[in-house]
Length: 306
Image (cartoon, rainbow, N blue to C red; front, side, top):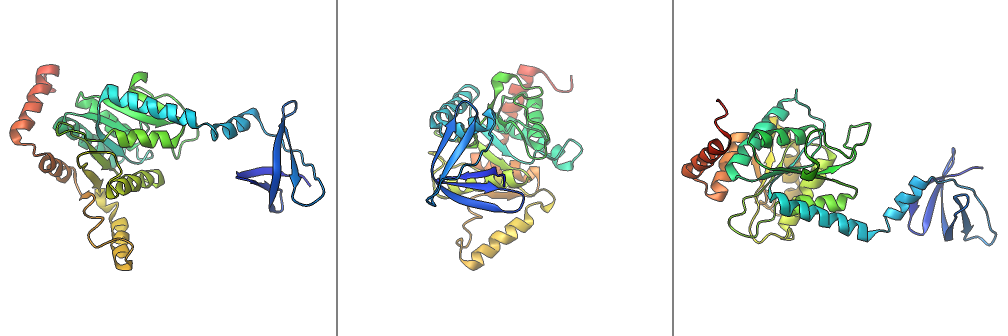
């Protein structure tokens, strides 16, 4: 009976054949360099040998899990990129909603308006879909753009370490999700009143929800590392998040969150105008301040209508 490796679970290895999955506790695991074979000594008193072939790539991935120094180094690179481009608005959203989708158009316009309003850098996952929309929006505003990319987005068949049009010095392709999340969080930290940042949660799927709720938990527990409060906006375009909000209301009934607790941590916005009005109020931005930003833009880049 032949086996293939299904997963490594600490001191257990899950072995799989065509009929069943067997989990066997191993006393030791060793690699024979000359032929990349692995032998197992099982907890029963007789020794059983099974030959399992692993590619060099698979061995490399096993080694990566034992490399905290590499994760630390990637986090450092994220911080260096933020130091160079500046903190600002971080966008979380779907990689699957393309230019023909109404949410893409709304996200692009929102990113342009927020970049001008807060006069800040725009950060995203530097991928396709709504992340591309906010990148385009920031570029229309002529404001700095940065990103923390991953090799392969959900829904993509192939992986790429390179962005289609951003200069390489404006983004970092992350190997480790933990490092990428460190970067996304640090990009919104506010240590003085001059920092104007925001987290903007656009419609999205599993990855977006993972990032949104991690940000929400860090803000809830005051572990986000910011001296000053950070606005978190949930963009409920076309009632996209309404059922999620209903579920969170149910959580109050079950007692898993306190009444009004979640609502106090973010601002639910049904439109771009609502989001912009909230940020103006949050940062006390007057119409005079807004006109100064517009004047600054035109004096630097000229009128967009010229």
